[in-house]
Image 1 (cartoon, rainbow over the protein chains, first blue to last red):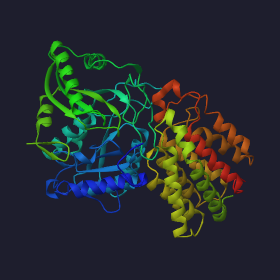
Image 2: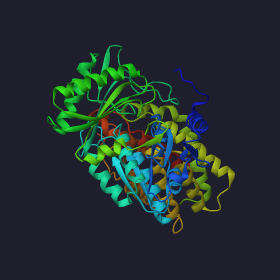
Image 3: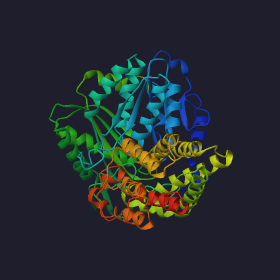
Image 4: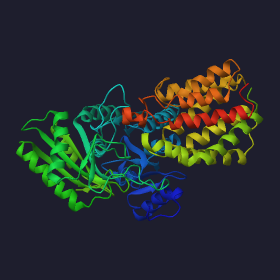
Length: 334
Length: 194
């Protein structure tokens, strides 16, 4: 293992420190926590707080999306480990402006339990909290035999849509309604070329041969659905879009936002090639792509690979929300 | 019966076992989870030791609560929420009784409420449930604990992150069941099982 770090035990705390000292205009740290809040408090006044969080190792998620038009606060857990309820509660308190707080949770049992405990704590203090649990990864079938689908890169679209709505004054109940409407329209699937190494563990969570890839891997290295020999970008796109097409049952004329997300160790050059092939195939299929984004947004430490998220824009206002101004470390647009 | 002294002996021994078995627990967690169970619990064990060293608990309730808060605030993940909830429920119940079986039963009820799992789903419940039953009859033995842990091996996970690997979870011990096994071995050794 080669990593730029000091004691692996302190990697999250030191990352948070580096982040707030590098970007004081965006984020500040809540005392004695690894929770971060917007520096520009005036941008939150009178609005519903929007928070997220989860294990670290997915940077810039989540703290990189704190700022006007997106999150109010975010909580950084240990690497690939849910944050603790006391820290989530600290973020809820910091985000609350008297209008309640909405939480975006990814569907992992640890996250769900800890955010739930934090909500109980907030209830005792009279802060109204609602939430959505994102489960966009279609690699794992949703059945009674699993915890359900995992929450992955599509969470970024959820942050963006809700962040834009909160900034425009949506109430807590309106945010909940919007989140529930948006959720089934966001679906993601990934392909991995190599595994991720958790700093404290020191070796990769899984390994692939030099010429091997795996479809459907999760953002913590959870196993996917098939391994095979390395193939050209166009073929990977065909496989992943095939899965998404089946999941959405999309038709020519349908309108989508597309996110190509790097898993951490895949160069942007390759991500753009992959996006090109996605756009070519969608064009051939007559699909209308109204919004695109490429880059490292929901990473998995040093995993190589990409994920592909399609967001079906069944409501025109959702495109407005995607294009709404945002000012964060990882996503800025005017 | 769980006196303050027994609780402290029990937990100190558990913390020691966890730091010794940290790498093994993380290894168990790698094929079916995300490989961090040992590291997460070791962080909790360190926090428990720090909390108990800082202030000697006045009574059993204070001791159990201190353990719960250290677990809830330092472990993270599902195991932090689950172990923390179990000790918090034991702390609450300890105001009315010091009977080990009643306290463990309260802990088990907390686990079931928080995690929504039942027996046979390859989780720590598969160790807690038979241990609670045996303790009620005053008959907890190392064999009961070991058998319960071993019984998770052929199970198929339907809860937690291990559920994502489906059939591939069969043939692996559940890491949470193994760490719960250590917890009850320590309890037995501390003389708290009666």
